Amino acid sequence: MAVKHLRCSGQWVKIGTHPCWKVEKALINVGIEYETVAGPAMPWQREKRSELIEKTGANRYPAIVFEDGSVYREESKQMEETIRAGRLFEKAGSAAVTPG
Image 1 (cartoon, rainbow, N blue to C red):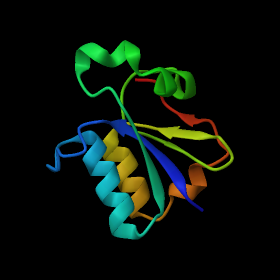
Image 2 (image 1 turned 135 degrees about the vertical axis):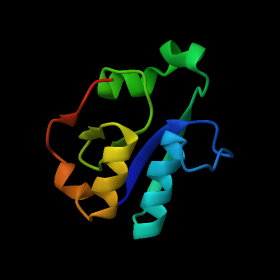
Image 3 (image 1 turned 180 degrees about the vertical axis):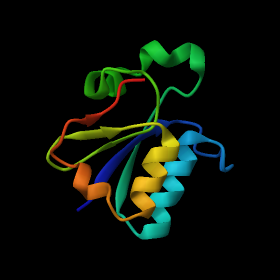
């Protein structure tokens, strides 16, 4: 099952503290197929993140959209831990969005 990774457009930022990269690296490391959906990167552009806001009700990246349309969003550290623990797909179909 492939997922969509909603993230900022700063895909060149590959440092461990970057929230979007942290989640993307976890997806890569555990071998989960994903499609990148990049949006405005800068904090002052948060209100322009229309797809993210529509799907999560919040304007902060990252988020995961499953094939069934359900969305998973937590702080990136929790998302990374969930992915690395092999529990990402447990979040599909649930109300797994934490605004913020």
